[in-house]
Image (cartoon, rainbow, N blue to C red; front, side):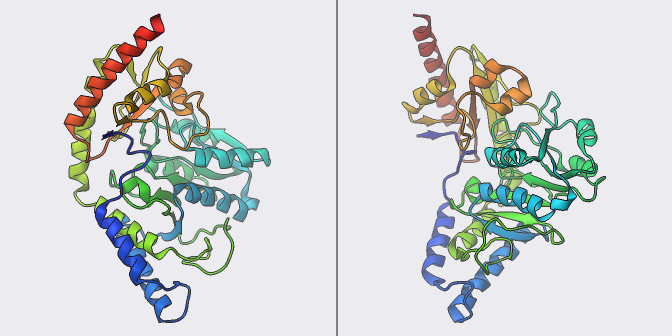
Length: 376
C-alpha cells in the first residue's frame, strides 16, 4: 500500500495508542468526581494541558473538543452568540474547510453578512482588501493557517496587524493542517482550532485555543467539564493521548520538515514531466500538500484507478459535501476546468522516495490508459 492522503488523516502512532490504552485501564474515574479516582484523572488531564501549552508555547486556554470541526463551530457560534451587540459582519476566504463554510452559510441565512476577501496570485490573502473590508460592524475574521486542498499558508501576523485596527474584532484560525508540520506562533490570534488525527494521534479529539480574556457562548451544554465552554465528561484517555501525539510530532520537527520539503520538490518535478498535468500548488503552499489537475479525466475516476493498485490519494478535502468542483482551486486559478479535475497528494516524513517513484509510474500508466478510452 502507498498512502498519500495524510492531510485527510494520519496513522496512529504506536506510542500514542499505547498511552491511550494504558490511561483507559488505569484512570477509570470521572475527572469531574470529587473522590480519589476522579482527582487522579483530573490531575493527569491538567498535566496534559500544561504539556500542550508548553509545546505550542502559548498561555491560551485549552478547550478540548471532538476535533477540528467542533472547534471551528465553537469558535464561530461561540463568538457571534456571545458578542451579538458587536455586529453582524464576518470576513473569511474561499479557501476554508467545510466546517467553516457551513456554519457561515447558516449565519448568512440568519442575517449575517459574510465577506470573502480576494486572493493574490500565490493564494495569500489580499491584505489591502482585507483592510478595506473591515468595518465597525465586523465581529469575526476566520482564515485558515493552511488550506487543506492546496496547502497555501497565510501570514497570520500580517493579517493580525490589520485586524487589530479594530479592537473589537476577533481573529480565529483553523490551524489543523499546520500543527505537527511546522512550528508557528499563535500569539497574535484569538482562537486556534486543531485535531489530533492530523498529527498521528487518535481520532475523536481536538482542541480550541482561546485567549484568556475572550468569552464564548457554549454550543454544548450539560454542566461541569475541563472548562465552562464545553460540557461533557472529559475523555481522559483521548486528552492524554492528544498531548502525547503533539509531543511526539514536535520531535525533530525541523528535520522532518526539510525531508518533506525535498521530497515534495522531487514529486512536483516528476509530476510536471507528465503530459497534461498542471500544478495548482504555489510558492506559498506547504510541502506536505501537492495539488494538481489533469484535463480530460475525471478526478474521481483517476482516484479509483490508482486505488486498484493500492495507491491512495484524494480529490479534495475528505469532509467536503459537493463532488462538482474544488472551490479552493477555483478561487485560486479562476479556471473551472482545473477545479473540476483537481487531485491532492499529501506527504509525510514517513513517505519514501520509492513510494513516490511507484506512484508516478502508475499514475502515468493510468493517465495513458484512461486517455485511450476517452478517445474511443
